[in-house]
Length: 129
Image 1: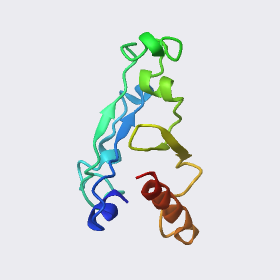
Image 2: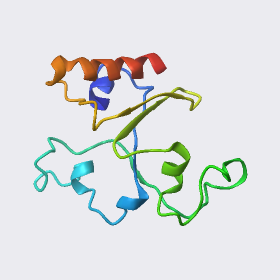
Image 3: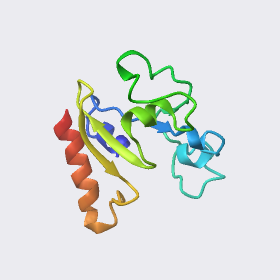
Image 4: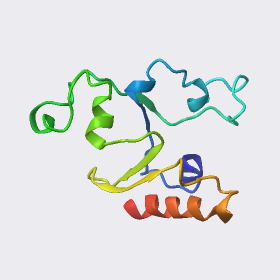
């Protein structure tokens, strides 16, 4: 979808992934498609930035002190945002939450559900601009 938006001239939308702390030791090579030959799910190298959440408590200070804690086996960002695996979160330009959609339960594949989920999510992104 990101590549599609860029090809349509929409350049003020950004995507990024944040790997959960509990998955820090798991391979994410095929998640980010950095080795096309080794991954059957990849057609091209992923251009979306990928970050790693940590459980060090650096984000759990000051106004966030009551929202997360260090060394609880859940990453600080995932704690702060109450993230579940495969959550897709759309923010507006000011960083306010627009919607959270879990992609495990909402198939984003444009070939399934007649593309309705894909188009709905794309419209949410466009409306958040």
